[in-house]
Image 1 (tube, rainbow, N blue to C red):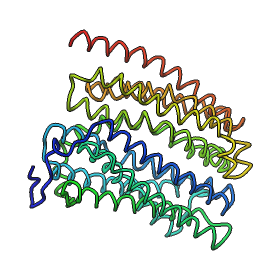
Image 2 (image 1 turned 180 degrees about the horizontal axis):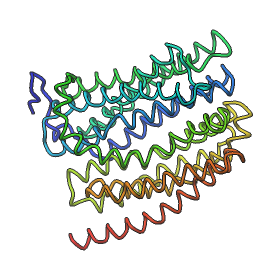
Image 3 (image 1 turned 90 degrees about the vertical axis):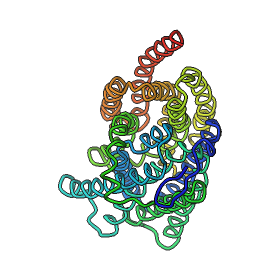
Image 4 (image 1 turned 60 degrees about the vertical axis):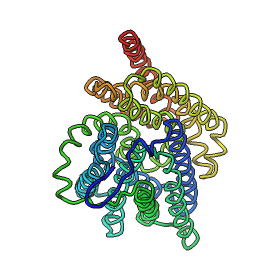
Length: 427
């Protein structure tokens, strides 16, 4: 397939590997990212105080919120566009231009807002502002890279970029810890940003080597991206209902309760998210397959549920069993305050899997409004319930989180079964 402007991109049908291989590759990639991230926080916890860790956690969560907002559904739109046979290079140029501009605007907007609303916990150093901006932009680009390579059947390539990026961030943090004790949140944030930037660069190189794409995003490309936004925005609103509660809560804890509360919650959530990535990534692949082959949506959904529960459930069981030893690597105070939280969150894997399967079916069928309303109500309930018991510790917060998530999963699970039965009857 000719992509235009001298860039050749191989036809998607010739590069598409099996969906299961893409999913396993993504799971391994996220496992590598999570492992490197956990090691990063172990090193950071040894290098500075709980307060500085809490402030860094809040900043990282804010970056992730900015990336989820800035992506504007461009990754999902790329999956749809490539699945329909549109030239990948033109689609990718528009997507990268849109998210690059959006990431910059949102990052600057957040920094200004934080300085005005929470000056006591806001950093005004040039280093922090610069690294925050770079992290938001490159982090958004990496999200689009992930989904673009899934659409092209190359999801397994994520393993290399996340391994390299995570290793670089860990190495930078280790160097800081070795050179000086009491590192500031600004310096730790710079180390974390370096890893994200390297992962983005590796992804760009992979796109060029694997499918011949050379990024050429421009303002003109962004103006041509309206069709992408029309497809992407509903998808992104749904994605935000999935991801925002987990990202917002550490931020709320740091600014409304105490930075230490965020510091004790975040490791448990981060490790539980390692198990949650199995159903989350399967949902992306399920959505991609549903666009390309709607007739197999029912079969793909049941297969997705089985694989997600098998792989994610195994990871959750390991986390529950090894919760205290793993958290002890951060320090005994983390083991004392976060062990119960990790075990409760690991138990929420089943409920999260059902929610992801339901959302993937809604994406493939274009039933965005229904899923978004459900996701918004569930997200508000999750954060409100956790904050209401924050004074009792991370374990109580996690228990309330899982109870609310389970109630939501039962409701959407019944709806999912009804939809799949109807599709079977129609077939």
